[in-house]
Length: 440
Picture 1 (spheres, rainbow, N blue to C red):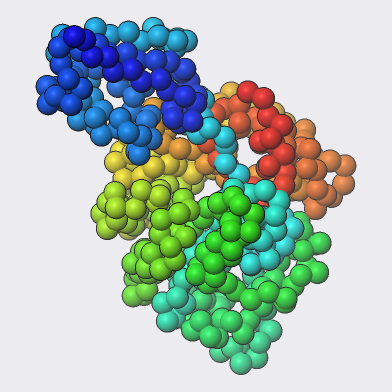
Picture 2: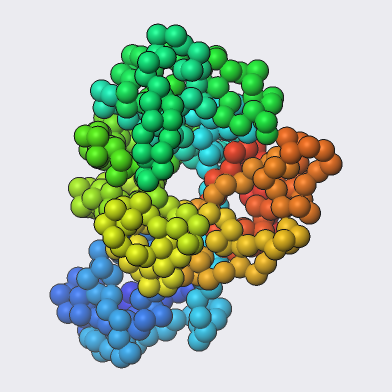
């Protein structure tokens, strides 16, 4: 009697749209539960296909034991048939997304329309169709994580006009750069709550200034609560994409953020087990430390290695004397190393598709291909709808503050062609339109 194990990979089960196929292995006189089947060997191509099974797929545990790359697909007298896959004898299309639908990340909320990192900005992002909202995280004096783009807050709050805090102004060295102003780590949470948020770039977003001094600085816990509330009311899960800002610096002033971040995420069942949480950082060591702390115990938490300009170095590399650059991390070897501790990468968009002096898009680099080969998701940043941030051919008539949503849609869709898995946008309604109208 022959036992047949057949696996058909649907688009959702695959998690990777490069192939529709059925894998059939016939095992002569061997019950499916027999231990001998744990020694089944698969070819490299079969291994790649099957490795995209979701973690909870009923056959995943079997393949975790049985998948081993080999040129000889023989064990337990099996015969192999791999059918229905285009390009079976060629390369996998590594420029296709690893997700079913590209994800729209509300960068600091809907920061093109509301002052960034406010609950109003996150709410607007959700209302405009963001799949994920992104809070940048810094620490208060009493160790509470709050949402600010930087720990220096004179450009995003009214702190410079609050007389009682005038003596808090100081100069510090943050990641090797001297900065003067007011810093979150010199304020308790109660003191920060006395301040009000302001538009960071009023010259590009003058319309946002109408909201100045209306909103408080939110804590991470408050952002999570909003995402949970809106998930319940809309019927769609709003995911979270927190960034740990300046981790080496905060460790140096005895305010490390990693344990606090884990505690805040674990404190709410929404982020503990329901929503997907993408934890990102421009540094490497703190992501590795987070991986060491959580291991695989929280499968809904994903770590993402952010990447700055190719020539720059992660600041923890600078401190450690490591000469590698972000460009080194973007190589095939670099991506493979990242895959040992992270689930994705977040590069600056021009590292994927550069533009020339006339603003014309160039051919995509190997970044997406290298990342996907290592099974890493790719989330480039940042797409903005104002003239100040658009390539020249996509600008509208008018000054830098002029909005051109159609130009932003066109820009985003160039990157969708390159196979990105998600992207950061300051205007999630524009991002949603770009995704929903895109045809690959």
